[in-house]
Image (tube, rainbow, N blue to C red; front, side, top):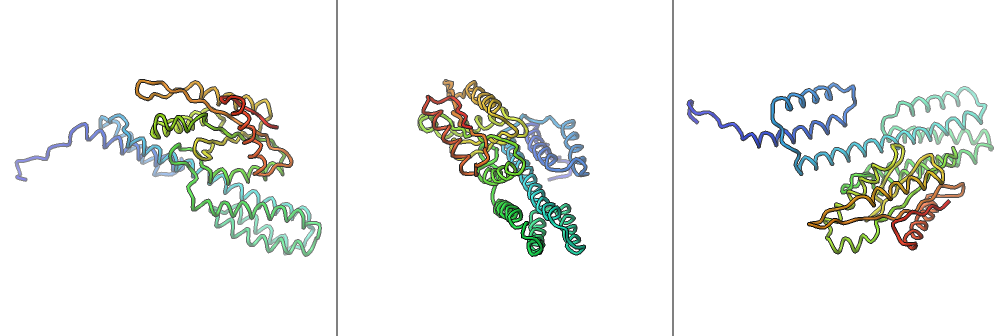
Length: 335
């Protein structure tokens, strides 16, 4: 290129698209960072500069994919963090049980205090598991001193072993469904064990909802899988928008979803289930010149004293079957 020639600036449309993609990446990254992180502040300032200096184009399919990616990361990060804190709580419960039931010497108490400090400082599941192994040794010492501890400690040991094993396994698996951007069955399998354990200890009731899109197979066959995927994403979004912040929604598999409602009774379970059903019934989906309506059937069960993970799901699933037998697009609550 000669000295008299100048580079042609990129078209405004191209610059706007690049700016839009860059903003999507910046906004997603800032959501992953803590508020006190200096990088978050710098990225927000950069985003402001871009918006002021460039005419940013409207969002494209690529921007939506970027947004979905960061949404999955944030949801997975939040979920894993919650499970890590639960393991901490469960191990600390064991420590307090030992402390309350033992009148031991200074050496034993010093070991327990060291466990407590290490658990509080643990940042990863691996850190927690190391403390758990140390704690098992201390539990054995406690057993040698007091037979009365055996039954209580065994309950704690089984619960913590089961959950930590699930958490270890889950670290190698995705926790968020890539199509619907809600928690998946791996996450459900981890969460349900936690909640059953908490109910046994604190007796605070919660409900399990099993939801199934009515006639989804024939719908999929008629209008195609692409339209079917849009329906699944929309239904997942509607369910998520219909529940409270303290509740959880999971894609269990295919067209089946699971919702966990916390701190609830039969009437509120029925009311919230009906709220979800009506919200989905109000929606419609456009396929060419056709408006397609989707309905959902819901089976619900409130956890009871004798429930396990399996028995609770079976009761909710049986209620779902009854709702379908009764004509679909309705709820059935089993208590």
